[in-house]
Length: 216
Ligand code: FES
Image (cartoon, rainbow, N blue to C red; front, side, top):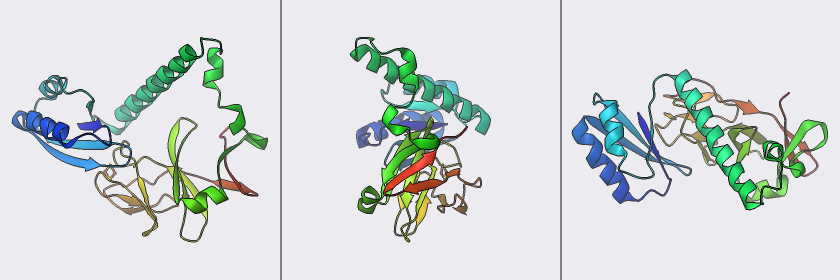
């Protein structure tokens, strides 16, 4: 089981969760990341009791880790629900004037020649070494490495497929706040416990603009 909370979840909430789960036979490992706070639970408590006990705490997302495939399916379902909710909110705000299909398509300004999607510019990436992207339904990171080359990778650690990686510019590594796994810019595992390489996406540069190619 893992619990996913807001990255700025107050310490009191974390303490309250800990006080709730420990008497039920679970140990907590808390990791704070830039995008989320994750509490990994280990132990032999009853998952049903755990879920009902945690229902009292708002803002705590309980995610059972059954198998990688099952978890992947759960994530896709949750992502679709979140996207749909956001889209419907937008449509409501616009008085329903936009056809639903408009929400399902990418913004016009993002489409370039030959199915290229603009994701940033070189001046922008001189100011920052990494940029989070949400593209093609995936969380990604656009990265400038120590030699000034650009890379795009999945932003989600392959160990448990839930934790967001953080770019460590000094070490030139993507590091996972959950259990310390690390990947290089080519997606290779540099440090476990992750063992599966990270998906990467070629970045194309036209003048000062940086693009990713839409997959066919
Ligand atoms: S989730 Fe365990 S190393 Fe990333």
